[in-house]
Length: 206
Length: 206
DNA sequence: CGTGGCTTTGACCACTTGGTCAAATACGAA
DNA sequence: TTCGTATTTGACCAAGTGGTCAAAGCCACG
Image 1 (cartoon, rainbow over the protein chains, first blue to last red):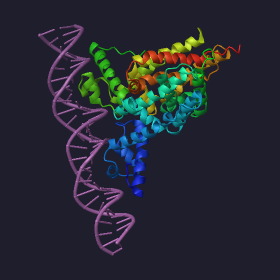
Image 2 (image 1 turned 30 degrees about the vertical axis):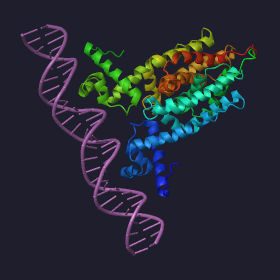
Image 3 (image 1 turned 90 degrees about the vertical axis):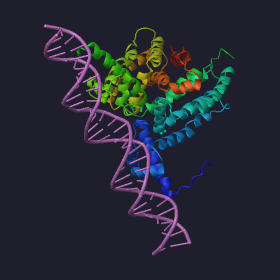
Image 4 (image 1 turned 45 degrees about the vertical axis):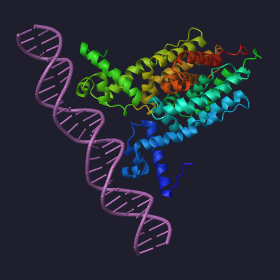
């Protein structure tokens, strides 16, 4: 593996930098974030920060890679065994929980995509596309077997991404319109009903 | 009203600046966009640009205001007469068309929200919230009358926003995963089926 | 202790940024 | 054609940017 024997102090400072970078990049984007900003939030001087990461870009890239490593786990976890509707529902709920628990990661990703995905374009049309295509086959199989309604697998997945990430990325808007920021419960119920209505197979076709 | 008697040259240059600003701001965000960038795209020198707009912020604000003026028209147009399901479906399709036809405006808005809506926070909790609440009453009325299924009005609206804006804001990802960028037709069909399944009232309750 | 490597920092640099200003130029109505 | 106004520009500026570097401090281990 990528062995990096770190001293205690290295581990602590690198973690602080990544945390500060996540805060800043997820809100202001890459170009909108400054090194001084990150350095101050991490409690380090700028040269000291650059002792741990060679450049601003390196911090950003490290964050993005760490994100991609875990971001797709829920989708990977969607298996062809078990009840199809519940499999898909579980995936959607898992993603919604991530919007609640890791909104900064969601926004970091959103920022990167909004700007044209300059750092991860290859990943999108490579790993991500392959993974989605793979799951699309499973979903199409479920449809063909009559276990779920007939549905476009790709757009179903896009729907789940859209419906869940919206709550993290547009949290300010959601909270402003609702008048509070406890959207998780109602959003979960709504998401459940929405997908269930669309996916439950009609009895007519057997 | 706000009278501004413009010369032909003023109208042309202001329009060019706003167009260039929309391009830049929607992709790079406020802080990620430079005046030189806008000036060059608009075919003007930087001082000349600042002759038409007093500051970078003024360009951004002008774009945002122009956007807000028209962004909510589709929702405003959702009336309580006509068939409820079709009324909601028409709104959703209209929004999807806007994602197709005005993706830069969508991304500009997304960028602003992602950064915490510093310029339009008041608008969100003021005009927008009032409008959504108003439409929520209508939707709740439809549900109570049994004309559509029981649904949380606010989250229904969030769903429509999420499902439609996703295609504009995350176009890079959608296109990469699909392998092409002609998502409109399939997305429209999927959106239609999704909402119809959720909204069509069950026959049991009469 | 002492010493060699890990860590931190102040000073510095070239470049970019948003913005200013006075002077020059183009334009349109009389 | 002329003249006042609208428009344009080159030169400039202070602040902020990402990044460098040599020197200093610190810390564990022999």
